[in-house]
Length: 140
Image 1 (cartoon, helix red, strand yellow):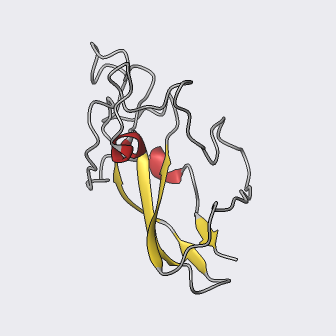
Image 2 (cartoon, rainbow, N blue to C red):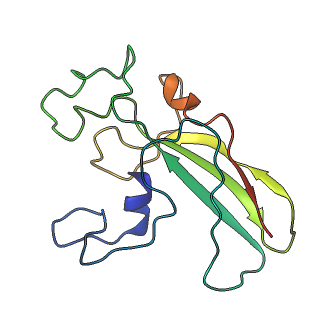
Image 3 (cartoon, rainbow, N blue to C red):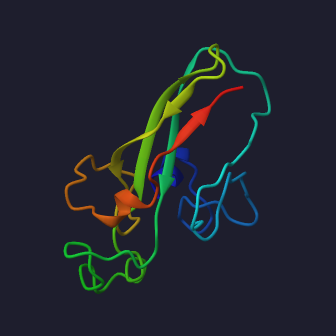
């Protein structure tokens, strides 16, 4: 995933995904909820100024005409993936409270997970862009 490479911490297994020995907090990992949901979280320390907020989402077995299960037939990591992860972004301002920031899709991760490049061409994605109808972040 794009976020894993962005950490720039290679684990003992040679990958960038955290391991049980080096866990990191994850806001939410699990089956995609069928309805709207609210995730409330907080930072460990107070922040000021602006920051870039990233959000990455993916749905396994989300195939389409371009992203089918034979696209990378010899890659075990891809076989159940389908369309690559969609990366969303917003610039937020911690000094302005009670403002809703809409995250917008800006690209997708590498379909096989081999690198951390962000591909900004979303034209081949279909249902992957519909996993979330909208993503809004509010700072309190």
